[in-house]
Image 1: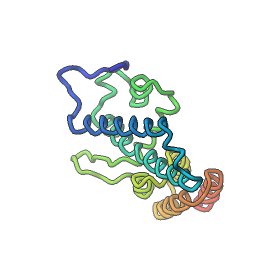
Image 2: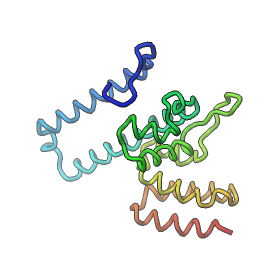
Image 3: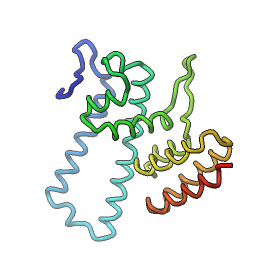
Image 4: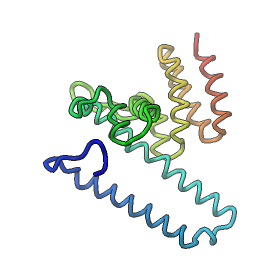
Length: 194
């Protein structure tokens, strides 16, 4: 493994999980080969857009796995094991991504991943509607950040109003451009704040 953190020989990755990642890698390589071999020439304008939409739904689902792994790492104390202060630093160093991108992923995991109580009980995500939309590939990581950031601004307000706002923003995310969604989120926050 070519990263700052490598897996010790006595700690192999879960075989089924690693096999699924390997299968995904093979499928992406196959997709690239099809494109390289000219498969795009078989698509008309509508076929191209439909294929792009299908690919976007797949791309939007990948953070579901990412956030579950980040949340698990946080709950299991992975930063301390790797002599890092935070999970953000683990991602920055282990994945060679920016601090900003690492922080965005960790924040998304905080609110969109299933959680575990101190007694071991599984708890639903803080943002269950947003998490479900991402699991279905209906919202982009960029939209997730926009919606979660907006709702964090009103986290101390009426929980029912915040949840209703989450439902509304998720619905709008499937219909509006990013710019328009941003404007709706700003208006919603102003409406929720007492």
